[in-house]
Every structure is written in structure tokens, then in C-alpha cells.
Amino acid sequence: MGGAKGMTLGVIFGNRDFFPDGLVAEARRDLTQVLTGLGIQTVMLTPEQTKLGAVETWQHAVLCGQLLREQRHRIDGVLICLPNFGDEKGIADALRLSELSCPILVQACPDDLDQFGLERRRDAFCGKISVCNNLRQYGIKYSLTRDHTVSIKSDRFKEDLLEFLAICRVVKGLRRVRIGAVGARPNAFNTTRYSEKLLEHAGISVNTIDLSEIFGRAADIASSDARVKQRIELIRQYAYSSEAPEESMVKMAKFAVVLDGWMDELGLTATAIQCWSSMQKNYGVNVCTIMSMMSEQMMPSACEVDIAGVVSMYALQLASARPSALVDWNNNYGSDPDKCVFFHCGNWAKDFLPDIRIGTAPILGTVLGEANTVGALAGRTPAGPVTFGRISTDDLTGSIRAYVGEGRFTDDPLDTFGTKAVVQVPRLHDLMQYICRNGFEHHAAMTGAHCAAAVAEGLHNYLDWEIVWHQ
Image (cartoon, rainbow, N blue to C red; front, side, top):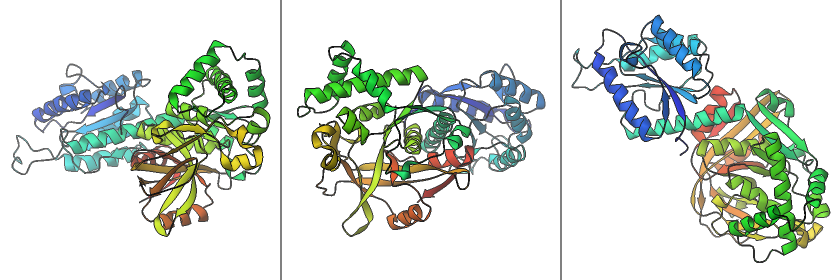
């Protein structure tokens, strides 16, 4: 998982006065090197403000809390570092006074077996338990490193840090995101129903526009407009398009110009679009290519006005720092119980499609006319890691629930059209049973990295959403 560069962590060093001061000074030096190497900015007390820049007393807690509170607009998460046992009360007080609501990671440094004398003994193994006990008493949510104690300079801790930063991105991103719903959902697709009020309550705002408004604005743009010509050139650079008629390219370009303007006007990050059947009947094109280009630019776009689907895409994008896509759990793969086919007709980001090309949508074309479906993409996702997931609003219980899991794209043979992939998922049958028994949608989001742990931790621990992590 990438995406660490430019993020900011508040850092709290715990200390107890009867432990060696040198342990805190070493931890500060080592942690600063690690964070700087990852491009992470920090907000932390200096040795001039408190002893060693650590938190040990109520006075230290007040100073630390004030600092974090003043810089809260910058802070993505907080790292608690325990070079020794630490003062659990001072740390908890500092966090309470900071008024932060971001994720928190608790790390403790390990003792060395040959250094149990007074000069090097840490007892952070025990201190971490006390810190977590106090955080729970204070009602403060937190995350843990995979190992109870872990060395600051170890690769294991760097991996923990990167996963924690992914958690921070998921939580911060989903708490304040604005999404555009373009058109009404296809009437035949009750599966893309969602609760706008539940999403709003969670900080996810949905803004709407009718397709007729998009079409009307597009009609007012001249084909010779410089913005249209520029967009056509971008489309040609993005995907192989020699088989796409110029008329279709112009329509796609105008649609993109209008959609960009609407998104900029309302500050939208993601969209879900009615990609059929009004699009083909009244505009004469598929806009899959435009949706793919937006997703590739980290502005996820989902088909069939699947708002919960694009929220799922955005969550995976935040965690992986890579583009995401919306897929159908579409076909079994022969008799292999742990493989299936992901498919859409298709608007996947180029990140998934090294052989990307603009074509048509043969299935829609059987009823809408294949000439009206120019703009659908075709391509095959090569072997590699995948995380899949789905966020869904449940009106019956008034809750937001989700599942997430990991698998692998494979290079197994697959002879079909559209955007497609063969996916291997451990215990796939059990996952399908869970999806069906709990009434989840046939749409899922995917991203080309393994990041399920960060998604599960962010949604469950910090957003209080119900989530199942398929392992």
C-alpha cells in the first residue's frame, strides 16, 4: 500500500521517570528517521517543551493536547510510541484534550533478552496493556500493531505503519465525501437501491442531476469547441480507439466536459451514472470510457447509479492508493470451486486493463442497437493481487454493513468480451453463501492490491459499520 507521502501523524512518546531516559531519546531519533523516510510529516512535542518531548504528567498532557488540537486540521492519525512502560494516564489525557477523532496506533518497543538490567529495561510489553486499558476507559478508539511489541526500525513496523495510514485514509475519506448521482437507477435494478439518509448520517453526501440536464448542456456545446477537441485527444491517448466513429467520440467528449463542470461546481469526488438504457436511447453512446478515465484519475465512477457501489470503490481506493472498479460476481469458472469471473461491459480503470480498447457492449446492443453502445471498453486483467468488497445500506436495520476479502487475479483462459478477469478466492463457496443469505448486491468493488485489513479496521473500529472480513 502506498499513499504515505504527504500524510501527517501526531506522535506521542510515553515515558516513566524511573526508566532510562536514553530509551526515549533513541526512540525519537529512530522513529523520526523512519517517518521521514516514508515521507510522513509529524506533529509532536519537542524536548524543549517537555522532558525528552514525551508525555508523562498532567502538565505534559495539557501541552500535548493543545498542540494536537491546534494542528488537528493537518493530522490524519496519531501514533503512540512506548519506548518503555510509559504513563498511561498522561497519554489518555493528552488524547482527550486534543479532541481528535482520527485513528490511533499503539506501538511498544521490545525488550532484549540480554539487556534486562536497569540501564536498558523497557517493560513496554506491560505498559502497552495499561495504555490500551486507559484508552478504553476514556472511550478512545485505537488500533494495534500485529505484534504486541515491534522494533521501530524493523520492516514489520514499517508495514504496520503503511497499513495504519491506509486506515487513516479510509476513515478520513469516508467521513466527508460528496458523490454525484447522474440519472435515475435503471428501473429493472432494484439491487442498486440505497438509503441516502443513512449515508448522509455517516458523512457521505449525495448530489443528483437528471440525465436530461446533462444531455441538454452537451447539446449546447459546439463540436468544434476546444474543450471537446482536447477531450477527444485525451480519449485517444487513453485507449485504443481506431474502431470508434468520430460521432461517438464527440458525444463522449461533450458528456465528459459537462460532467466535469458539474462535479467541479459541487465539489464532488465520485459519481454513479445511469449507463443504460436512456444513455443509448436518447444520447446514442456508452460513456464507459469516460467513467474509466475518471476512475483512473482517482475519481471513482460506478455504473447503474450504484451509489453504495461507488462508496465501496472509494473505500478500496483510499486503502490501496490505487484505482478501483465496480464488477459483477458474474460466472463460475468451470468446476473450480475457488475461481469465478469478474465482468462488466465495461468501465474498469486502465490500471486493470493493459490491453484497453474502446469497443461496444454486445449484450446491451441486442436490444439498444450495438451502434449506440460505442464507448464500452474491452480488456483483460492480468495475474496479480486483488481486494474485493461491498458496502451496503440496510434500511431494515438502519445500519451500514459491508464485507471485504482478498484473492488473486489469474491468467487462466477466458474467451469473452467486455472487461473481465478470472479471480481465485479461498472458500469462494462460503463467501457466495454469505452474500446470498445476507441479501448483498451482485456488484462488488475491486482494487489491484491487498488491503482488506485496513478496510475492515477502518469501517468497523472507527466508523462503527458492520463488516465481515472473508479470510
